[in-house]
Length: 547
Ligand SMILES: [Zn+2]
Image 1 (cartoon, helix red, strand yellow):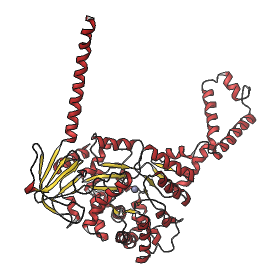
Image 2 (cartoon, rainbow, N blue to C red; image 1 turned 60 degrees about the vertical axis):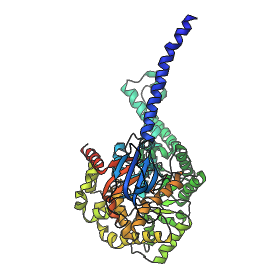
Image 3 (tube, rainbow, N blue to C red; image 1 turned 45 degrees about the horizontal axis):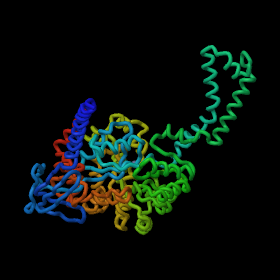
Image 4 (cartoon, helix red, strand yellow; image 1 turned 180 degrees about the horizontal axis):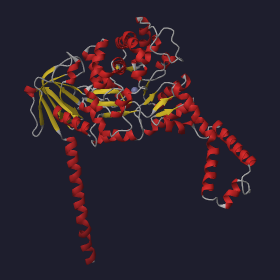
């Protein structure tokens, strides 16, 4: 009896202290996460719900959300809140890059480039899984400083024509595989002075292999290999995964449907379709996405662009994808590019835009991608001298200079690109916009020459050059993109400065509705409710470059 009375406290006290410690830690953690309060005072708010400015406002942020917007004269500031003076400044939603590519071979810390440049959300259009799922979580948990990420899985599509031969060579591996395996075993046995039993098994009991027997055995294994290849015992997937770790190569309708279903089950936010598959395979993938209720974005192959628009795909990720439709005497099977005369007729552009509108297809214009390519073609030195190259991996810059770089290979296309293609892309963007296609901001970072985060601001300028007003260009990177996130995964609670919205914000020194270039004159960025002054962000970037 006495024993048990003394036993209880012995276990009880450590248990209670542990419980207390746990409550303390978790409440401390949630205090930081939920109760952090920041107030912008005297600021001009650009809410982006419509084209207007609310002057002299107080904007209160608690946790990750905007909880109050009111005139500064009427507002009281909660005790302990961080106060940011917004006098003479403009508070607008953070930008979203709806066509971004996370790197495969770099640290997740690289993602800081986005929010440090005011891009608080990205859509990753080609993922290496599960790596990018992990990055998505790390940002969400606050382990890594980065933008909110929506990610596809690996690109679903075919292989480009110049890879097809390589592909057939891969198939040859299956044919030769049994023979190779046998040769390796034979080699190993010789090396280790062949244990008798195995040796006799392999060479049918003979002490030394006869030439004729060796040929017979080789032939048998070769036939076996042909059989394996014919029945696809080793699926091409295996080779494709080795060759293109970031792509889901599909060759048949059932492979396409399978790929979509598997990616959906894995937890992608949307699927990314790519070119180079047959019409049948492409349409099957889009159809499966609709059946599975997963959002599809991607390239629209030139050979059947109208059917691709009607396939159920929800957004086209380059305006350039539509350009071949306007090339005179163009053969989609040929690889010719940079020579064609272009049909600039407005009615033909309207027709295509109207199909997009009818089928609810949005457009990520990515004008900055061909623009950067054009700069590299016309003046490679200027591209090489850009100060922002400090954010570009050195090996990429070496690649730009190499003989095989696109800047060198496409050298002859400069005049055509500037005089013919560029006006087409601009007019197409404007036409799609005018006919009612939602335009989204996208840069195609990290492809050749595109600096993550920073180039979203160049894209804004190009959208204005195409004919959008500054408000319409900003809408592409804010509220239009949030609407897509809503359609994609029901997470559209951002993209405007309104009560209840996620506090992804940029504070700028001058009015971006007058000149979109003002989005580059930042006083700081708020990422999911946490404020970073421009000084802090620049320090962060400097440290990144030094590493
Ligand atoms: Zn891309």
